Length: 73
Image (cartoon, rainbow, N blue to C red; front, side, top):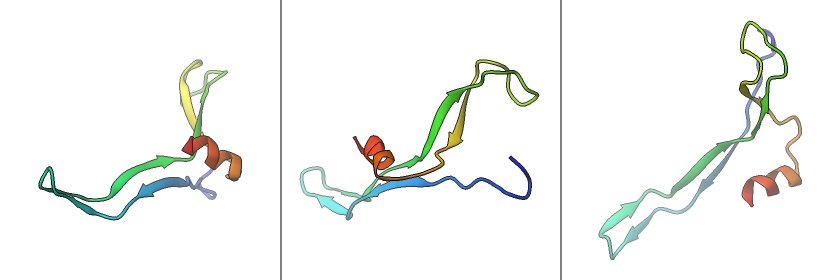
């Protein structure tokens, strides 16, 4: 990672139309969730940023049909 090229994380958002529930007498805002398209990995070597064995995250390089299917199912 460098200062010149900052990584961009893609997010998967699920929303729906806001609805009013007659039984509960309340309004639902329509927001379901927001998930980052990233993967977790275990650090193999120690560095000044994280010791060996810690769980780190990195962006998924290519987001295609298979990646979306894994996140949705």
